Image 1 (cartoon, helix red, strand yellow):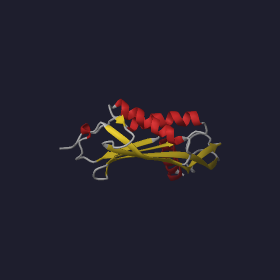
Image 2 (image 1 turned 120 degrees about the vertical axis):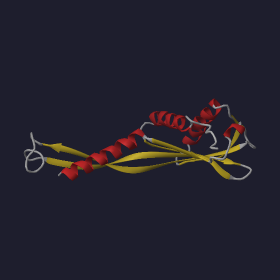
Image 3 (image 1 turned 135 degrees about the vertical axis):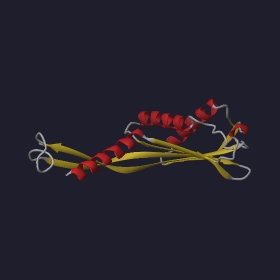
Image 4 (image 1 turned 90 degrees about the vertical axis):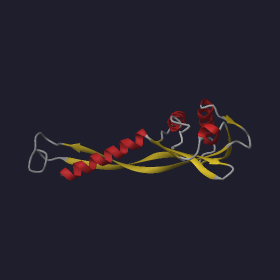
Length: 175
């Protein structure tokens, strides 16, 4: 019973992590991002085409706030974005009739535990930046967030996740 409770707690924490979302970034430590001031889009892809302009707008706002300018072609950096969704199962366990105190079965009294699996739609957005001259990836941001069934809420989540992605942008080169 104790190991079951520990496992249920771990599953619960993983579920909470998915609800809160996650943002990760990585970059080439030898690139001086301060030399760049313009960028061009090479591709934006999303499962739902309504999200393509929303993704571009969210990224454009963040890069503009950092002093970068979007140019139709020939930017110093080439940017692409890929958005996708998937169903991710999570488990919820409800306990009934636990009673009081500790008994020989872990908890006092007879109890019933009911575990159900719930599918949550999780969205992932990957933004890549390339050096057009070398065609090498120089920066990547990945955001993952549990989605709502309301597009307005998801658009707010998109804006928040992209803002988090670019919070420490441009990165400083490592010596």
